[in-house]
Length: 112
Image (cartoon, rainbow, N blue to C red; front, side, top):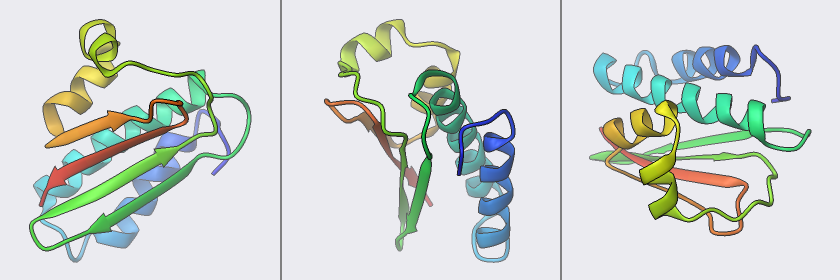
């Protein structure tokens, strides 16, 4: 998807269409919140270019990734201590998450 103000809404709609019938509602809601925050950050802070979202459900958890083409390196300690509210929300909902050292990608795991 292209970065825009509508990108988080489009990502939520795509998740709902893909998983509303196969995922518990509370898990889907947490997934939508996490993706909203990450796609919103990509829209605001990444260089122009497509944002890619992938989600892989497994038996007891799901793995997801938002890739935006950014090239700024990040340190997880700094993000956890100084990140904005959105990243604290991701931290509270995700079982685990990390930003690629070279930037441009956030991976997360959510209990399913």
